[in-house]
Image (cartoon, rainbow, N blue to C red; front, top):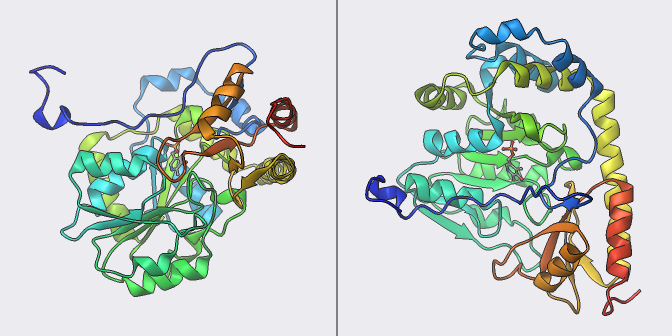
Length: 355
Ligand SMILES: *Cc1c(COP(=O)(O)O)cnc(C)c1O
């Protein structure tokens, strides 16, 4: 802290991302990165990129990427926003759409970055508890609000809500914006992008970080009515005209062009998730039904902190949250089959583990 800081920064509590330790031989299952490389076309696009072009600024509109996303979603370019990772898209969304007089509604347990934006912008918020089985019950969001945001599938639970429930919610709250964060939607949930043409109050955010294996390039996007997108563009152009660099745009387009590779990676992650869930169940874990590339699991006899420490000693990194109510769960990213076998084998070695 320093006397030179802006006053509001003194009390700011930033988001803590999962660790990125540089440890040889570590099995990293803590930040939901994809275990498979990006589509082969991404490597080609980066290799063939003419570095001389880097003298110039990138296209501030990222028009080519928006066109590729338009082809992919069936939406128009003016219904699409792109940014430097979906965290940035969300940061701009909170500023552009969710700073209202009435409270923002969001789940009590969800992506913890939302609370950072809420504090940063001084937004009034009301947190709605999950059900006893860790689900988001959208019928509880039918109360006066200045906007609603939730992740679908939710993080860190991995559980998704059906599209019909989102449709009912949109109809019950026509005067406020509903933001659905679909960071994990490709791993088996239904996307609300199908509703964008019907509901002018719906904004859907997605990312290339998880299902498209491009976390390192920072590419996120949002889909919604053109008036919502215009608000995002205004705020974006008040911070940074060029959030997407040329390499990121070229890689994102190449990724979208290879649907077969994309589907293949998704299928592999889902198959690994399936057998990993069954193996964890046999070891005495309760595993929530996941539509993501991670599982959220708690053991009957061991605390989350004990398990996390045990795995870390064995060079396996998973994510543990100390938040009351989920403090005994571990969030375990789905890695390759070999990585998940190593996880299961390591857990079996634990003296208190049933098998
Ligand atoms: C990973 C994640 C994001 C952020 O993704 P980036 O595009 O890498 O910034 C946003 N929301 C949720 C729920 C996530 O898990």
